[in-house]
Length: 405
Image 1: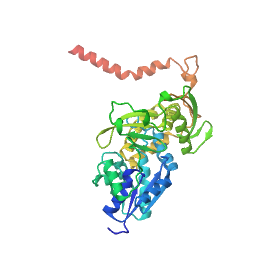
Image 2: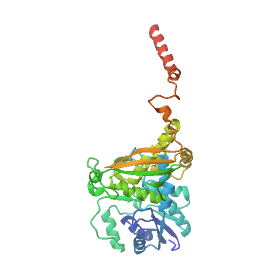
Image 3: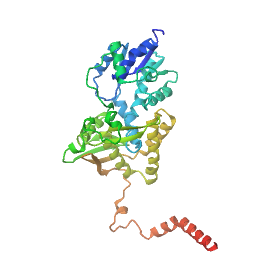
Image 4: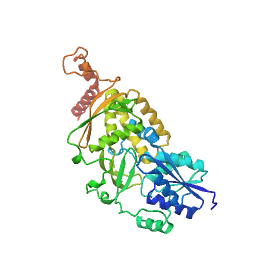
C-alpha cells in the first residue's frame, strides 16, 4: 500500500479501537488517523489522544461536538417524541450519525480513501456508522475490523495489544459494555445478558436506585420555546447546560433507568439497561406541554410520526429524505410548544404536575363541571345523532336480514 494513503478511524480510546490502529496499519498500510468525538462521555480527551498516538496513530483529531450533539441530534428526537419500543430514548442511536458526520469531515480534510469503525458484526452500530457514511460520502471505503480480523475475544485483543505495544491499562475486567454521552449511558453484557436477572446495583453510573434516592420530593421548573427547553428554574441555559443540570438533579432521585429486552436491527434480541435521567424529565415535560397546546388530530397523528421516527433513528436512517420530511412536520407542530412545566422528582419518578402556556387550548369555561354559559348541553343531542347515524343504519340492516332468514 502507498504510505501516503490514509484511513480515518472512529476512535473511542477503548481496547477494540486501540488495537484497530496497528491492525489497520499492518493490514492496509498508509497513515492511520484517529478521530474522537467528545459527546460528553466524561473521558480525559488529552489522555485519549495520547493513547491513540501511543498505539501507532499518525494523528488523533479530537472534536468537541457536545453542543452540536444536543442541539442537532438529541433535541430533534425529543421534539419528535420518538421512543423505541416504548422505553429506549435512543441515546446511542442518534450519537452514531453525529460521529459519522465528523468522521467524514475529517476524512475529507485528511484526503482519506477509507474510514473505519470498531463496531462488531452483531450490533446495530455498524449499520448506523456505515449508513451515515454512505449518505454523506458514498465514495469512501468503509473498513470494519471486527468483520475481518482473527480477533474473537477480549483476551485475543489484549494479547494482540501486548504484541504490538498498545497501551492497555492493567485493571480488573469490567463485566459490562457501556456507551456514555451527555444524553445517557447504556449497559450491556455480564449478568445483564440473562433477562431473568435484575440489574445489580453496581451497574448504575448517572443515577441511583429509587431505594437510595432522597425521601423528599424535589420540584423542578422547565421553560420551553417552540419545543426546545431553554431554562431550568428560571435560569436560562444552553442546550448542554439544560441537560447537565437535569442529569444531576434527576439522577439524584433515581429517575430514568429502564431495563429493556429490545429487538436489534440485525435480527436478535438483546438486553440492556439505560440511564437517561435528564432526558426522561424532558420527555415527561414535553408531553405535558404538548397536551395543552396541540389539537387532538395533530397530537394523535404525531404519535404515529414518533413511532416511525424512532425506527428510522434506531435503524441508522438519520441522513434520509424521510427523516428530514418528518422533521418538517415536527417543526410545524412545535410552533406553539412554548411555556413552562413543573415536574416532581421522587424515587424513580418524574411527574409533570403543572403546565402553562400562552398558546394553551384549554378553556376552563368549557371544561368546567360547574355552571357555565359557553356550552349548550342540548347541542350534544344532534352531535351524537349524526355521529351514531352509521351505527343505526348498520343495525337496521342486520334486523332486516334476520327477518328475511
